Amino acid sequence: MWQIIGAGAIGCLWAANLYQQGEKVRLITRHPVDADFLLYQDIQGIHWRLPISHHHKLLKSTQPILICVKATQVCQAIQAHKAQIQDGQGIILMHNGMGCAEEIQKILPKNPIICATTANASLLLSPFNIRHTGKGSTYLGPFNQQAKSYQDIVIPLNKALNDCHWCDKIESKLWLKLLINIAINPLTAIHQINNGALKKESMQKLIKNILKEAFLVLPKKTLLMSETEVYQLILQVINLTTDNYSSMNRDIYFKRHTENEYINGYILKKAMQQNIALPTINSLYKDIKALEVSSLIHSHTS
Ligand code: PAF
Image (cartoon, rainbow, N blue to C red):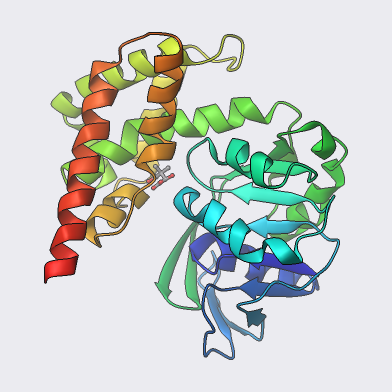
């Protein structure tokens, strides 16, 4: 049985598609939820009512656990279910940003850790109600030695959402997604604009600066793409998602914690280790932090 921790847009998307392929699926929520069906609108616009089981407790099993919560909640989720997780059980991490796998490795040193990144887009309309809004590739790969033999995990996932691949050097895919996220998310969050508004010349200039700085800390030979190629890819993502609001934009808008520490923060940590100054990224990091603090204070006082 697939146990998916996190019933957000991406967790529910996998749950729906695995279920439709005949897989047993159980969504693990933070709190008990009163829902008999997962309402799912697929990419063709077809509506489904899927009787997917859910619970707030993880069952003991040996099958890999798919973790689809935000980077900021991964450690908390693992701690909450640690007693149910067996030594040697695979842990698949699927979220924006980097740095979580290192933290999880410390909590679960005997478990294979698989990192995953997906370009599928999904919208959580309300709890247990999602719409698949965009198709894209999914990559999974080993973070540690124990996970190196897990390539067959992509077979059911590929049946469910296709364009799903095993990648021995998953770091390259994670970094590429990180570069896309760092170029799009903070600016759209700080200025509360949609992705399309990044086409403005002033924003393009900033994106080029961000990218230049991020490339200074990108580990050598991780990415087989030049800075210009990555910039072109970012433009492509902006064009494909013109009307969308990025996840960080929504987090600031709804006064939630953002993935700042795992996007800007991760790159700044790498820079600090190498004694490199990244002024543009540092100022984005500080701006997001200030917005988080003020919106959290605001939400407590209002
Ligand atoms: O985090 C997001 O919103 C998305 O990963 C992306 C690709 C930046 C599109 O908005």
